Image 1 (cartoon, rainbow, N blue to C red):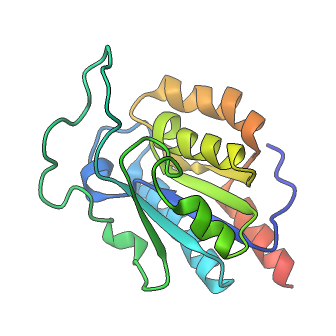
Image 2 (image 1 turned 180 degrees about the horizontal axis):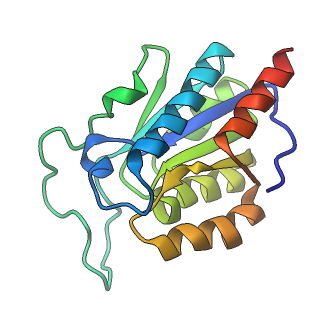
Length: 188
């Protein structure tokens, strides 16, 4: 872990903490992930920094060797954010139809219009939605930080591989509390 700093205008990207996803069998208890996510959300809101709530409502087209996890219409309420996030009117909401939140959405433009230069990424699933969003943020020139205790995956090997091998090449990693402490230090 090498968490060093947060830019003055850093946004929190909360990936796929929605009703249709959080009930899946996950590597880490979702309650702990949600608790840490909420602590980060509260800290970002306290410091008047953007909170971006991202949900998934589809998938990229094309053939795959493995069957898609969800096919056809999503069940009622699938895309609804979990109540623990306490969605606020000033939150930025992005609905994606790919693994990453930047592809085929206006997220990059919205963040840059607010002067955001860094993102903190959390959510589900570590090896797909979180990693793809982090990769795309990095490729768009944002500084990237990943709160590794505020994410989980359905596959332990994917979670571990992303944290150990991918994330250190995309940005900095740290715990939720380390990120909150950096926010507090900045305003002290």
